[in-house]
Amino acid sequence: MSTDTDAIERLTNLTFALLGAERPRDYDWVYAHVSGYKPRSTEAFQRQLARDVQTVRRAGVPARMENGLVWVDKDAYELPAIEFTDEEATVLGLAGDLGRSGSLGAFARSGWTKIAASGATRTFDSPALSSVDNDVLRLDADVVNAVTACARNKRRMTFDYTASPTAPAQKRSMYPWGIVALNNRAYIVGWDTDRRDARAFRAMRVTNVRKAATSGFVEPDRPLQDIVEDTLRGPLADARVALSADSGAGAELAERGRREDGWIVLEGVERDWLVRTLASLAPHVTAIEPGDVRGDVVKLLEASDEG
Image (cartoon, rainbow, N blue to C red; front, top):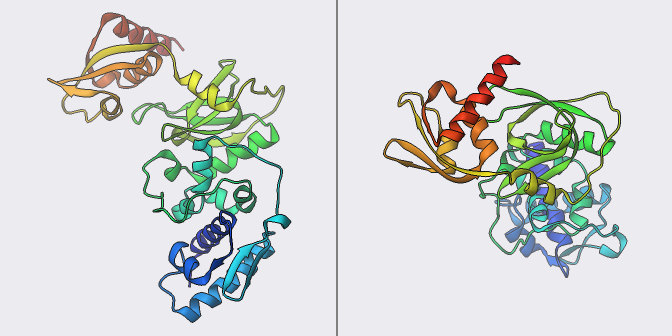
């Protein structure tokens, strides 16, 4: 028997395929292009397809199936136009593929038919995109549910944020505006109530999201994509960092730079990120160049001790 996740994925794939089609599709096309129906026999496939059409009809999608064809009556299922950026549409279009192992299962289980109807489709004639390696494939469904609920209800939320794999979790507070995809990473963007400014936090590093008391929700003043890009584009810096050989630390630094003669060389990285990451790795850092970056790391560590 198929699991609930398998059924959700198959129904989502079918809905997206039909909504993205300009004409009715025959049974053979559905079997060949919509993931979730193989390797059933012809009779078993057609019985399952009939049940799935009835299921999506009960969910509010006017799907029809007769004379060897299956389609959605789009004239009976229209929503006000919703515009997505290319990256946002890609995220939403992948919802059917992301139902596995809880990743973005929240999207697949809540409102996916209306998301599909808005036009965020993926091309089923091309290879599946589920193999793309990015944050979207690994987002925690509980975090997605909690953040979107707070954003929808304009509620302040508290959460734990881990700036790097070796850093301790920080308790943060914000009014969330949404989740934005940028450069294969997902960011929770909103108004940081502690810093009193717009901030973006990498969603993969956010845990323990909780609703908090609300007073004075702050609205965004420009598109969220622009806010994320501006937030992440701080002053840049070049640096060389040496770490103790047996520490095993520095993987994140190495991803942003290169290893050279025992050093990790970083060029044009965000200065704030660099300083905070080095501070979190302080027990393992043996040398930092240039001196001004080293000085900023020392100041940050001293401020943390005083706090």
